[in-house]
Image (cartoon, rainbow, N blue to C red; front, side):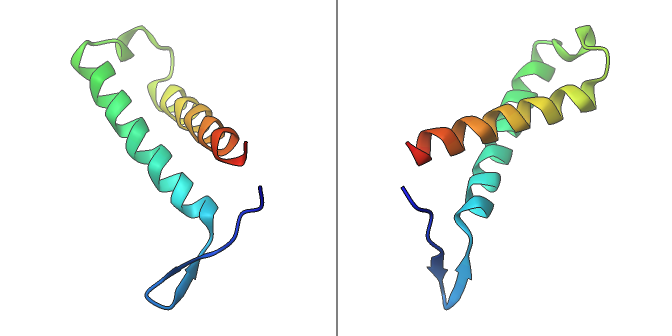
Length: 67
């Protein structure tokens, strides 16, 4: 599958940027769930852990859509 630009009100947006926003929203949800259950206190570096989760979610989204 080829990724083509999406026209939003006359502005072409790269599909990767939309995938990044979706991954960010999913990561925020996961981070809030982890904070609610106090799971981030078991992680050595919480910010680095959240960034890695974001990268995993983004990679999964890209792989699912590119399939």
